[in-house]
Image: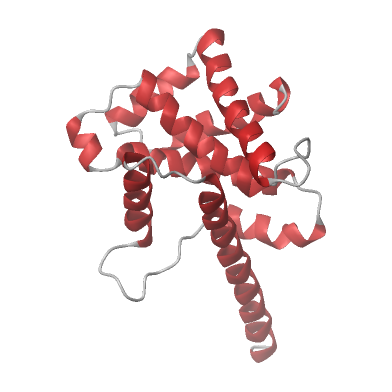
Length: 203
């Protein structure tokens, strides 16, 4: 279960990211204002939704039901809780539904939570990834090699249909977030190696 302090820290980072996402988008502006000015009762409801899902994941899929969720499972639970909260409390217009606004914002929430965990990590192996994320203002998504659509569009579509068919699965989402982190970690290594090669070449 996320403590009130931990949840508030993650929640505040999500609100900051909403503010920075697209000031010209009225739906996002409305959502930012809703979350930024959310009263304690609604905020507690959102936290309770998250904790309920996190406890279910622990009890169903983890050896130790009292253990801590890793950052990918935690981020996946935030995505699913955010979608549920939006469905219940935020009216999505048809044009926003067609643009998969709900799904895009939910994935943004998951990536924001994941980045917060990485930023707060004291592990030395996360330092180069932190620098890479700061340089690129967040996670890079892979390029598709066999599809006409961008990765982000396909990811939102997947989330939309999984929700519509009631087949949302937190471990699948957690694995996707893990793979996004792994991709960025590899890109950070490639970039660092290229910088070292260039430094040697132009000595």
